[in-house]
Length: 395
Image (tube, rainbow, N blue to C red; front, side, top):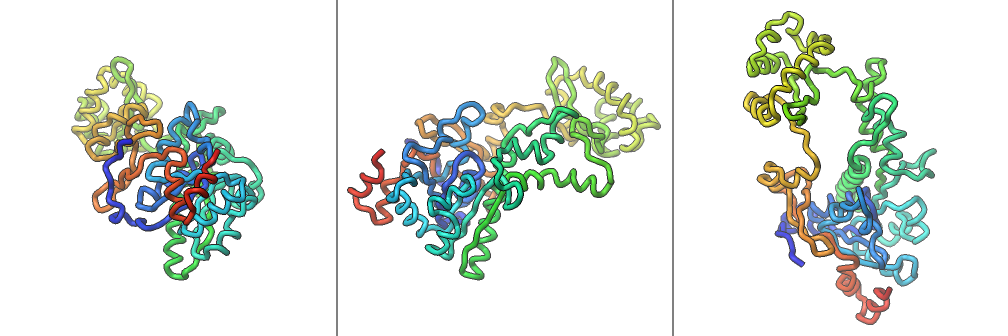
């Protein structure tokens, strides 16, 4: 299997940190991916048949490949005493344990924080759940569930038509907050010598996302309207149809930008209109101004509009599909996409963390692993004999 270009592990901030994760789907694996990309050795504990996430179809088909790069895989039967013993030996060597199973699952396996901290007092243990402890914590949560009950679907959809966001925002961001919590706990461990439990949750993450709308109500006394029905703070801040039916987002968000916009397109009549002098006056005039602008903008193609707005430093964005981003010139030029080999041997590209460290994007050191790809080497490292390894890996 072709390996990607390596990022030297000793240059990354969490090189030497060992993370053992009992995770599946998106939230828990995101936490591990962040730590892995930043240099940690992340060991994914999977069932002997492999994580079920590997076999998802449709919108879940990309989950495993994206969120499990830079990880090793060990396959263990945690329902057997021998498998649990191997997991405990592995945890004894870890700095961090991450899990995102249903409440009570890890306790039944003897892999909860209360049990493991007796084995390893320096352990940082991060749990990713639907809800933080409280009245809702017995409920089964999904990203879409908390979007509906947490105000996000209401804000995204049209009035009376709640709509989930177009990606797994709470799963991904919840995993990121789990990683942030791990980083904080590791910093605290440097001071105290002791680990601690970290918790991150979908619902609370979603509430954080809509907190700006909650505070809008707290400050103004007026409920926030769903985004498609909101009164925009800016007069020109919308999707327009260009010549040929293509769409483009255009924004003119200040009085100076309005003057530039009018000059660029030769709209002297609008620039000189006393009713349109300030942004607030233009917001009030949107009912007649926007239809007029739509008619004028429709004479131009998307390429013309993009070139004009870019030349005059005005905000714009062609409407792009996710698959188009695999060929985005900016992502290609800046190294935002990296080659990987999928577990089935196919080669593709993946999206790296949206940050740089000393000018470099943390890269891909390990391809998404095959099920149990590193089982034998990790068990041997833990002191198991070849015969014992054979018994543990027998399906």
